[in-house]
Structure formats: C-alpha cells, structure tokens
Image (cartoon, rainbow, N blue to C red; front, side):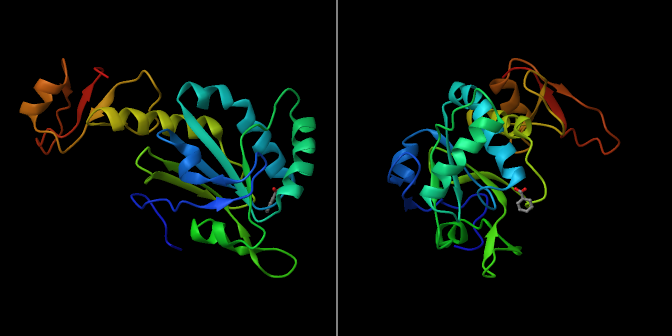
Length: 219
Ligand code: BEZ
C-alpha cells in the first residue's frame, strides 16, 4: 500500500516493539491512534522529537489517543537509544511503544519512506510521517516532514482537536484555529439543517452572496 493516504484503512501491522509484540489494531482497540515514524535511532532531531512527544503524553491521554513510534531500527537499538532520549529530556519516560522494522517493510507499507534519505547500504530511511487513525482504523489526517525538520507537537495536538470535533459535529476548523475559537459549519449542511443542529450561527456576507462561510460557537 505505498500510496496510503487520508481515508485509507491502516493495515493491521504486527511487529516487536519496546513494550513487547504488538498488533496495531489490537493495541489501538476502539481508541484514536497516532503512528509516527522517524528516520533513525541515535540521530539528533529524532532524539529531540521523541522526548518532546513523551512530554505531551498527558495531553494525548486526556484525549484517549494512543501513540506508536516506528523506524527501520531494531527493538534492541530503540531500547538502547531510549536511555539517551530520557537523559536529553529529563523527567520524561518513553512509555509509548516503538516498533522495530529492520527490513523497512512496515514503513514502506505505511507510506513512510523518504526516497531521498538513505542508510549506509543505500536503503531509503523513513521520513517524519505521522498518521492520525480514527476508531474505524482509517487514516483521518497525515503529516510528512523530511528528516531535517522536527515536527511541532502543538500542531499535532491542534490537528487532533480539530479531527475530534469534526468527528462529533458537522463542522470544520478555519486556518490557524485554536480550541475555543469559533468553528465553521460544514458546507454539506443546508441553512435549514444548520438552524436545527446549532443553537446559533453567523453568516459572513461576501461579494458572491453564496453564504457559505458560517461561523458557530456551539460545539
Ligand atoms: C536527525 O534526526 O537529526 C536527522 C535525521 C535524518 C536527516 C536529518 C536529520
């Protein structure tokens, strides 16, 4: 499934991990999940990222979201590297599982490889890919960065909050939206239905007169 993207089912990948053998679907159960790759163990940006994710664990737990990391390294390498991560970011515990994928088959199946970033033998390394997985085991959103750019986990949480809201109500979130700010009523909802679904909403008057920008705070 090399082109895996939004709307696709995430394969039920099975691998050894830092917390034991794991089957992705069983591990996630009925919860939301995030699977994220990093290029390689014992590399600087990855060391900052995995410690940073661990700092956000209470935020993920609050939202009942399970995390799974993966790279093309072995579980033994992950376990040795975790000591560095925990020393670099004092106070964190890397309690989320990191899958071992030395053959790079899982990262390839999950569309997480960067063809321009190669290991010493010329095999492609993972990008910084991150799939948000809904309880139905489909991909709800993905972000992909190259090895040289560490991810912003405030943005990961912000995206998650948007996805969780949009899974509950027929809304969408505008550019640069932050939790607590007004949201937009989905274009698929008629004005008549919007009046039934939301206590109130404001329609923005635009030159086209089409009335498609409708804000509500009723979420
Ligand atoms: C890093 O983690 O530092 C890194 C990994 C791959 C490419 C560039 C940087």
